[in-house]
Length: 129
Image 1 (cartoon, rainbow, N blue to C red):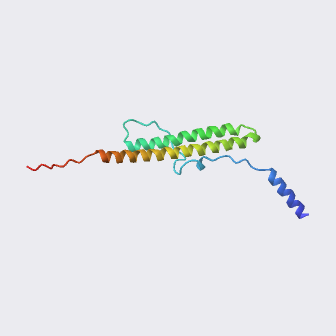
Image 2: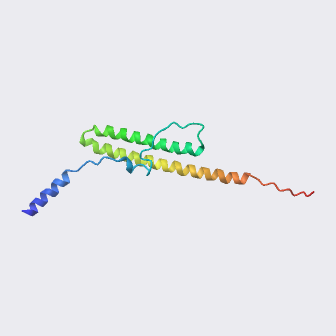
Image 3: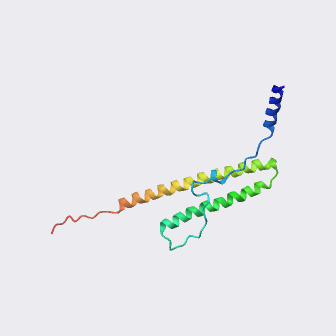
C-alpha cells in the first residue's frame, strides 16, 4: 500500500510544478539592486558623473526587467514559463554585453595611456653652455 501511495505521489509531483518567477537580485551586481536614476549634471566631477551613469544604467535595466515581468504575469500559465525564460535569457545577454562594454572600455583606456606615454617625448639639453 505504501509503495502505491509513494508511486502516486511521485507521478503527481512530476506533473505539478511551480513556475519560478525571475528575481532582479539574480541579474544585478551586489549593491546596485536599488540604484536610483538621476539626471547627470555637467558640473559634477568626473567620478560623480561616472558613478551616477552606472546607477542610471542599472536603474533603467530594473525598470525594463519589471515591465517585462508584468507582461509575463498577465499571460496564461502555459505561456508564462516561456515568457519568464525569455526574460532570463534577455537579462543574461544584457549582462554579457555590459561586461564586454566594460572590458572594452578598460582596454581602450589602457591603449590610450600606453600611446600617450610613447608620444610624450622627454627633451634633453645636450648642448652645454
